[in-house]
Image (tube, rainbow, N blue to C red; front, side):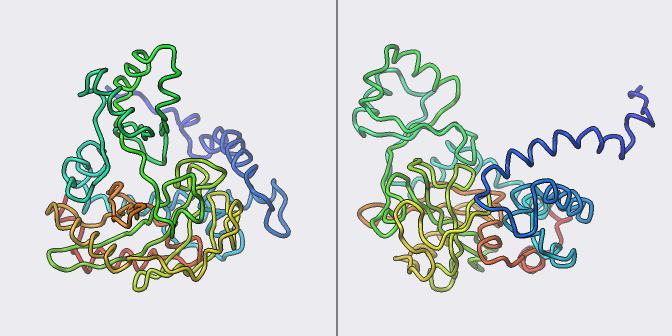
Length: 354
């Protein structure tokens, strides 16, 4: 027999009241990253408006970041509905992309299945001996260490051979990488056209594609660059992103970060974002088209593409449930209806895939 429901403690209103202090604490922590609050708003006024937005859009599960980067505090409800939150995007894509998750979410599986689009050296640490791991570090001098199933740059480690040689217990570090199921990859550098924004990170292009048979389309795309001297470019790691024209590869907006701070130029290098032409754009789109045909289950994918120092195009990873912030927040235009209609146009009703 299941647990009997308590009509008092399980009441929707009661549960929301209990969640209030936790939500407020998270929100206040988040907006510490705001360089300037929206005009006319205090921290408390902003938080209570955020609660109102969540009440008006229960299906969207609007995060603190989405509330700020989409500018919901200035939008009527009918305009808020036009945006696609991460929760909504995942729900819409799930029936179509379920089969691709095991090939894309698992970084080891991705590297094996898309090996012809990957030129950087790599190894799966749990399958390597201690001696092989040491040789790998010294061969490439600088490596990137990533947990097999991580996202948003969580768990990322940049390791130089000097740092490794200085460790008192190299064996213990190696065992830690095994326990964490880490992949070791050659730390590659960006082509000068992308490195100019922030040289410390590998700056990448997010290209969101639809494919059904021979039918292929770039739904949207953007540039992601690091910030503050960090080695990751994703927004959750403090990076900056801006939108691009999928037809031309030209950056069409200023930059924005996860805290809704906007940048005409990169704050560390002074390089302007809007109007920059990303090189090799036709070849990048062709690469994504070829990659999307590699497995029959690939439908909607968010590809992360790097242009390496010598101009080589490199797939860093593919995302089976790509977020849509990069094609909405910089230009402040929602893609909910466009995305939903394209799913139906390309693949039909989701029920057939369940």
